[in-house]
Each structure stands twice: as structure tokens, then as C-alpha cells.
Image (cartoon, rainbow, N blue to C red; front, side):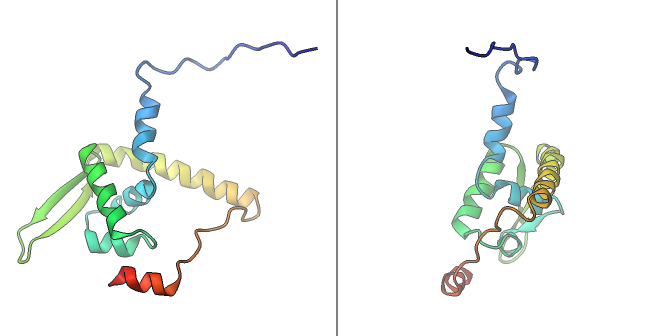
Length: 134
């Protein structure tokens, strides 16, 4: 005997699926980390590279360009010699911070419930880290 199919009580998603649009922005590897670190204020590329252990310069460049293109990050060239660039969250980017904060709270709770549960990202071998630093 099969079970009776129940009707969903969840409201239908809004037209155009804005949830998918937001998740496509946040779904990139390292993207939430970049937004998290920019939430503390403007940062230069080298500072972000040190803030986010394990990210490669290529991936950081890609994420910053994607976030800038989507309007979440503002890029400002500083009139210094040599010129430097600062990245900061735009108004739209700042709206993502509470979302990421909620994900962090739930993730922390899940880790606690699972007794530490999920392993942290493995440490890169020293030789590869040294190559990335140069």
C-alpha cells in the first residue's frame, strides 16, 4: 500500500526565483569568506589574501571581479604611488552580511550538535604554502 501524497503548505517561490539569484552570488567557493572579511571595512588585495588562509591569488581575483560585476563589492583605486586598490562592500554587499552571519550561527550550532562533527579544511603542505606566499 502506498502512502497518500500530501500537498505542500509552503508558499510558492516568488516569480523569477530571486532565491536562486542570491544563492548563485553566494554559492561560489570562497565568496562568503570574501564578503565576511570585507564586512569589517575596506581591504586591499594583499590584506584579503592574508585574511583568508588557503585562497589563491587567482581565485581571490576572480571572486572580487565577480562580486564587483554583480554590484556587491566596490573597487576604488587610491591615488598613491604606486597606485593601490581598496575593495569594500557596497550597499548590496552589506545586505548579505546578516545572511552569512545566520549561516555561521547555524553552522556553529550544527558543529556543536555533532560533537565537532565536520572536519575543518585540511592544512596545505608547507611547500605549497611557501610557493603561494612568494
